[in-house]
Image (cartoon, rainbow, N blue to C red; front, side, top):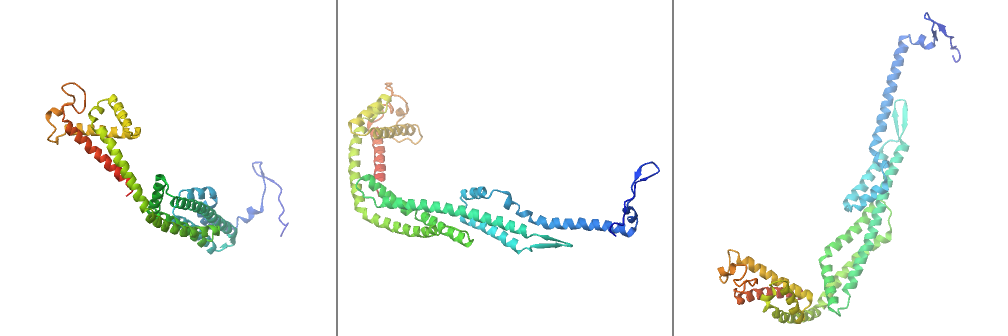
Length: 368
């Protein structure tokens, strides 16, 4: 039949226009053929929609190739997510790979076979890249944490084994022992988390340096030895601790003797700025450092402030009379407390605060 249909020359219609007669015009007049053409169009449209429905199922994996894997993984790792959350991410990508592998590589849509194998392989590859990228960054961060923890343990070991020749060395050793004993659970938790990290990486078949895994387990042994050494060192420093406590008691006694020299003239020290300068002069003559002198003066000023509040309160002691409620003396000396207040009561108030200061020194310096 090929070549039997010859094109007709253009014909002139009644209006003088050119008209080309085709074979379609003869065939389309047949009812069965016209119905068949409509049916073919409907089937073609339905076939296209079915193929589109099959392909659209893979839109849910769009994010696997739409974003930068390294940038997103770095942000996720830098947030400091717990290991459980990271394990869920690895499991999520593993489930995607397993789900893709369970799908048929071909899909028959009536007379058309859709080849889905390349698309499925591409999705599985992207999911595996996500797992690998996230696992590599996690292994890198874990290795850095191992190095940091190893340096911390090494520093604690160095400070713990330090010879206590001076007071500063003794304080450093005692502080190191306290740090080891108070942070034992924290360090053990960090070590176990490092070990569990490599367990998770191994379960998901993510490559990592095996030496880092050995170091993570070795750190646990190091920490246990360090903790036992701290207990042994604490028992050994008890005589040294008593020695420094005796030395501190002697220094506190000396400080108290110098402090008494400041209690008696306290009335004149708290008058004005010149009084404060005079206080520093007395402190210097009493061989007290300037910082210590300022501390004592601040305590005295606190006493005077509390005296003022006590005098104006409703719960005034019996020895504070109504004549003591005035802010200045009748002689206009501008002293506070007024000079008509009993010097004995004022001195007792100052001595009480001085004893509190001494007790605070004993508590902070006794190394108990």
